[in-house]
Each structure stands twice: as structure tokens, then as C-alpha cells.
Image (cartoon, rainbow, N blue to C red):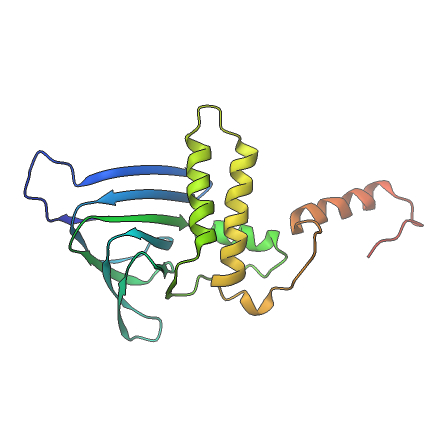
Length: 205
């Protein structure tokens, strides 16, 4: 991704902070940078950006063909679905948490929730969701550990994605409220076990 930096000191890196944790077509980054701009480009993955500090101005072409201009600050977050054209500019130091994930990963997580696979991220600028920020930073911190727990990191990533799918995709109208229960994949495994090991008198719903 190309970025044009407004950096007058050649020896000084425009990237002041960078933390990153990625796997399974899912990536979370925390970065702090100097002033700059990101020229118009087409998003190659689904992107969520939560402003931590500073202000940013974005311009995008919506799915309806209109041009939308938004100004984000530390109280906002921006959703950019794959394929959307967007450009951005920030005039001072800027810090953000970025979440990127592929359509394949989104579909996999949706199937875990017993939802149809045709799930897409909704384009939006909204008030910051503190739970998304908390889970994102916790995921980075866990992966950064020398003896990190893959199971715990996976749990954080899945909880984050389930929250995003439930609240910020076209799956909102299809979700149901459940108290406990197994994920879709685990429920299928249990049913397969019963099919393979129980007698015909063993019934379940």
C-alpha cells in the first residue's frame, strides 16, 4: 500500500510505532505515524480502522456509486469492505488499530456461527466500539509473548470476529440470541459422533 509522507527530516522514520499479529488470513496492527496521505486505492481485504489518536479524512466510492467524505477522530472507527475504493489523509501524527481479514476467513467464521456463507462487511463510519479495540490489542499482546498460547489467541480472534459479524455485517438480521451452546463446527462434530457410535434408538434434535 502506497503512502506519501509529509516528513521533512530524511533520516527520521515516518513510522513511530508498529505492532502486528497475523495468521490464518486475519491480521491486527497498531501503528503510529507522522502526517501523510494514502492515495486512492481499492481495498484488497476487508478493513476496520479504529482511530486511537489524531484525526483522519477519508473519501470513498460507495456501493451505490456516490462519493462519501468522512472525518474520523479518536471516537470513531471506519469499515471498508473488500473492493471498495478509498483514499485518506492525516495532517499530524496519527495512531490507529487496523483489522484486516479475507472474505474466506469471514466466511469460515460465519459458518462457525451457523450463518450463511455469503456474509459481507458493511461500509460505515460509526462510533468506536471499545470491545473491538480491547480484543484487538489483547490479541496483539498475546501473540507478541515469547510463550504465547495459540488456543487463547485463537479464542480472542474468534470472539472478535463473532462480534464483528453479529454487529457490522449483513448477517445482523439473521443472527439469533443463544445462551451457551456449541459453535456450528463443534455441533456438527458431536452429531457425526452420535451418528457413528449410537444405536438407532439414540435420538437427538
